[in-house]
Length: 319
Ligand code: TXA
Ligand code: MG
Picture 1 (cartoon, protein in one colour):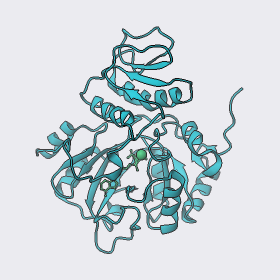
Picture 2 (cartoon, rainbow, N blue to C red; picture 1 turned 90 degrees about the horizontal axis):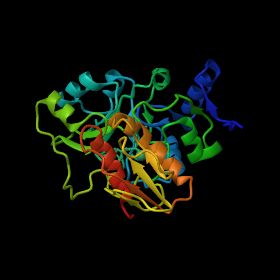
Picture 3 (tube, rainbow, N blue to C red; picture 1 turned 135 degrees about the horizontal axis):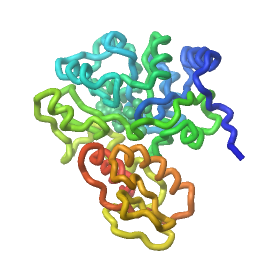
Picture 4 (spheres, helix red, strand yellow; picture 1 turned 180 degrees about the vertical axis):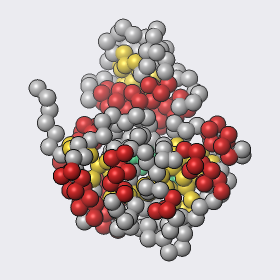
């Protein structure tokens, strides 16, 4: 029998009006983006922002990304610079987040950026979410719609799985096209990639014609949420494995792994974009089963493979 989800809605006229009303009243809704689903609330409102942190059980020191429709709506809150404008013109709206200096007089609530003097901003591409942003006179703080440290949701059912009826409306945008969170690039000082994603460091280097720091040996924690256990399925994850025994889920890539029952193939065609799209779905599926451990084969560390490996490394951390 098909499961009934009471709060998953297509963006028909009625739902659209309700979503706008809820957001204006400082409530939280879940929205689709091209990367993952997000928990959205008014970024200028302390009470809305507090609700997001509470729902996610997210530590206040881990800042949120603010989502805008376009340049015009963002200009009062952050200081633009040349590098930002170049990347914006090339990739936006799209799966990239920029860390910029906060502007004096910006109305962004201080909790959003954990009292830092920078703010993370993004211009999502999903047409439903853009239609909603168009109707609002405030931007949306929107972290991934999962409990802190958990697996990001890539379908409306995943969001339901995380929060049940605690969110009044989950806007149905189908499966996320990319399936991994946006690339985060710090442009507030030296150019640094803080989180790899679909847009690669090479794409950024080529557009800016500048050196880009991959932030590999980072000592100081610039993005508090990025260092520890994250994207966790709740059981041990062991990387670079060639096989998996009984009671062990085996995450694989490529056609030579196709037959065993505990095998979860990210892409039989060895397509990294397909693998990225499947990663969180597979982790969530394994989590709902009775495995004791996960083994993962080596995934090519090129293109979006860098982002896949980044998420897997976090999932494999002990705490
Ligand atoms: O694709 C995405 O970016 C999704 C969708 C919903 O837009 N959102 C998302 O948000 O992944 P979240 O909260 O799960 O991840 C935001 C990341 C965190 O690792 C946080 O530490 C970092 O961005 N961040 C936010 N503000 C920052 C700042 N001012 N400086 C450095 N890092 C920041
Ligand atoms: Mg997240």
